[in-house]
Length: 323
Image (cartoon, rainbow, N blue to C red; front, side, top):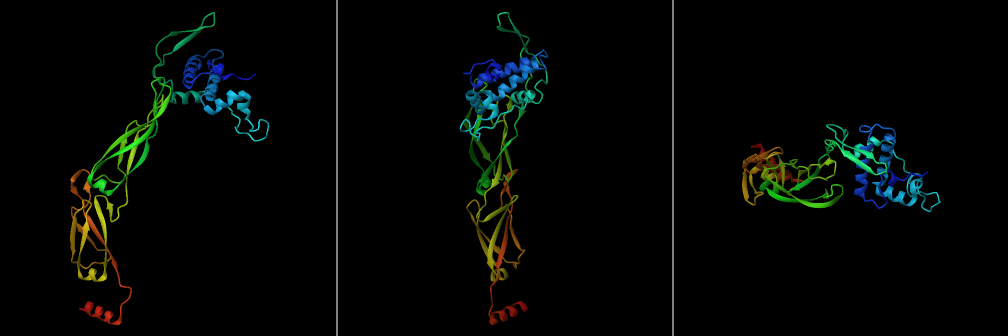
């Protein structure tokens, strides 16, 4: 004889998803072995769990509604008699405790003080209950892992500071406490001058809501966008100047446009060798602990040597270097 999952959950075939959840909540607590260890309760606990697993899954429910238990568990051929199945046969895993824990969201739903309603049946078959108190501390809620998202910022954003508006979509619970819907929300991030790559900004409990879980935190992680002429090293800015050999040996000046739009002229009177750097104090990034203080501007040099020299030029170079 085929199972009737709707009968197992004591609901009719027009039941909504919220009805299915309410029925499972009530019956799983009523027949749970930790509460009632009466003859038949373990079997009913298992029946209720399997019925909920099927009816709470839209695909399984649709297959069951159309083809019954046999069609659900054997799989339905695409041509109703051919060899290719468009659904694989369903087999319940048989662990009613697993279904129970997943529904209530805790590994130990009975941690803490447990109070419950005890059910009785009258002679006419109707159900009445005697309430001994509310069900307290039944659910051990767990928070979902944090959701990380990259926050891409230009060096100018991190130099001045700015405000970024980030739109997120998340699942929120409806007023009935059982169903949910997707809604958008705008999170505002006040970027502080001097923030570095990897800075983490946390918005607590802004993830998906659920009846038996604590929403995850959403964490934005700063990622620096590449800059056309600066790179960053902690609070310092690195700039590469391309010069020829003549300038490297005889001196020159470098004009650089800073992140705040100023032009600075940096004289270089030393002999520039491949590892030479010029440090300009206070022209780097703001320090996050005190934005009035800034790191350094470090100028590196890439020297372009001539590809070839004539005999006369080689002689002149030798004479010049000999002295």
